[in-house]
Length: 151
Image (cartoon, rainbow, N blue to C red; front, side, top):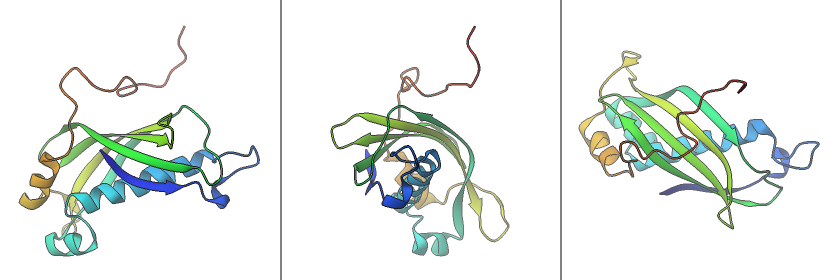
């Protein structure tokens, strides 16, 4: 499910002539905001529910370069969830469908008044249930990776 589209902005391009690594993180952060919009946690929803999402952990994998002006699409698949957390997998593609990067993220639902983790409000939980979910044992190949030098 594509949840966010953009283009590589000129200020995102580094001295190597392609999108800087930090800007991939920016695009995925904007995709999290788009996900929030999709699940009734846009600005009005955050106020209505007194609820928001925090990013607890993220793991980026860079696969191909992106260049100035290049169209980008970000899709999301849920790997897992519970009453207050989402384990989400974002994929960044170019206009030809080439995989540019992935971002695996753990997102935590937070009660804005208490500042503490809390269960998703019912309308948010219903919207989350409608998102694409990976089947057990059928996660994307790049999900669940660890960093280390393979010997």
